Length: 248
Image 1 (cartoon, rainbow, N blue to C red):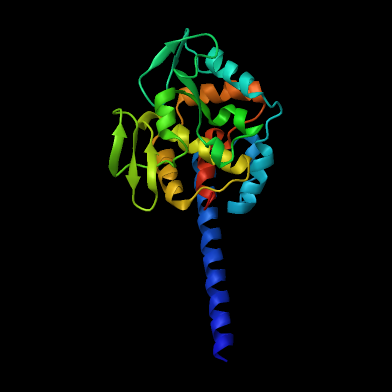
Image 2: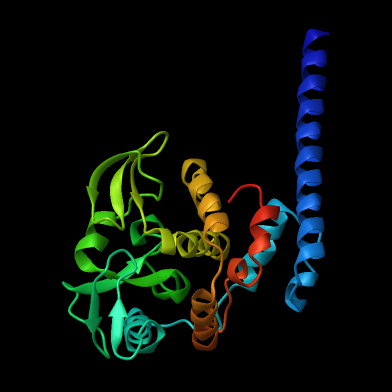
């Protein structure tokens, strides 16, 4: 009898949790649809939540043109992140003059989602939605550490920092103006390539997504990548979609 009661209690709690999640998701959709214009391709998703939404967004985000790794770097350094001949690091103040792939000891391609964590092969390794130019030394310091807001600093250049944070261990803190870009690149990669983001890191990414919303520069970069690869980052096009996914 006790076992039956316990089983019923577990079932009830599971259902209650599911109902709560569904209610939260529907509330998020109501808020999104009432305050923001929904692009046509996303209207069919209204009411879809969490795992179901991620399963749909993955194929929707698939690029029609997969670049070689060299091709991706040529695009990034030659035009995508090149402003009048200058390319600047996202993690530091350094800028270089170039029209092509620079010396890798000076500046290279930062994989926001580390190659060692699932971005080592095509098309992920050359997906411009999560690749940015970075000073080689700082990029090496970031390594494949998760993102966070550092509590105990081991290294800093007064823009980015490496240190530790509770519940996450050694981690990397990007500049304030790049944090939202990092968050949306990570969310994109998670749904596009069916990867998971640890909750200790996800909480920071969600915070940064809200604190550093999509700006015109990010929209312009996104539009150029769309023309190059033929795919979108849904969390740049419709930032509110983050709210209807409970767990990345």
